[in-house]
Image 1 (cartoon, rainbow, N blue to C red):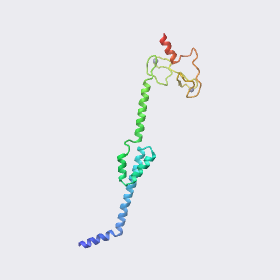
Image 2 (tube, protein in one colour):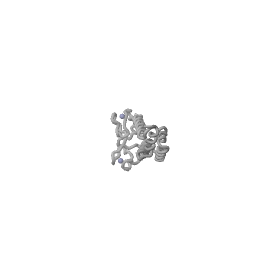
Image 3 (cartoon, rainbow, N blue to C red):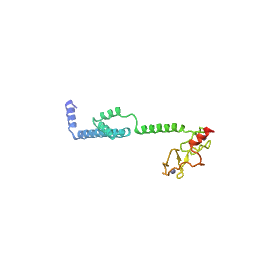
Image 4 (cartoon, rainbow, N blue to C red):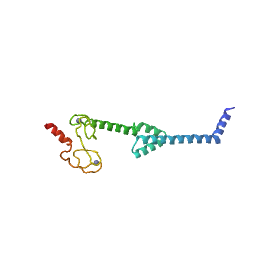
Length: 173
Ligand SMILES: [Zn+2]
Ligand SMILES: [Zn+2]
């Protein structure tokens, strides 16, 4: 086979239908891959970015310029997933609540008590009045039960003293 026939053979190949099919297939795969990278950017951006406009802008960047835009997005995307950020915020909130709960102590024996306790389980000091209707623990300054809207009657004489009075009596004696 001579050089000329090789060239003519190559020329025949490139002008043949086979070459067009191969070229179109290659183009097709490039376009599919391009759209796939943009879709990946969309999925990733949705997990990291809350603002829908920023997500849309990320997708546009993922499309234009092709492939390179997705690379730029990867360099500048937020480092954390939104789920992780929310989880951490919940954890911080739980820790704060735990710290706040530790501060709740019985005024008499200083045992740790829950905000929902009616009496101190250690020394049986009456901590809170219970709602007559729903039984929810009530704060001394409340005028009405926030859970069932039942008006709270002021403590009658002879009834178990509220937290403040019991404490005051104890300091006097
Ligand atoms: Zn106590
Ligand atoms: Zn109530």
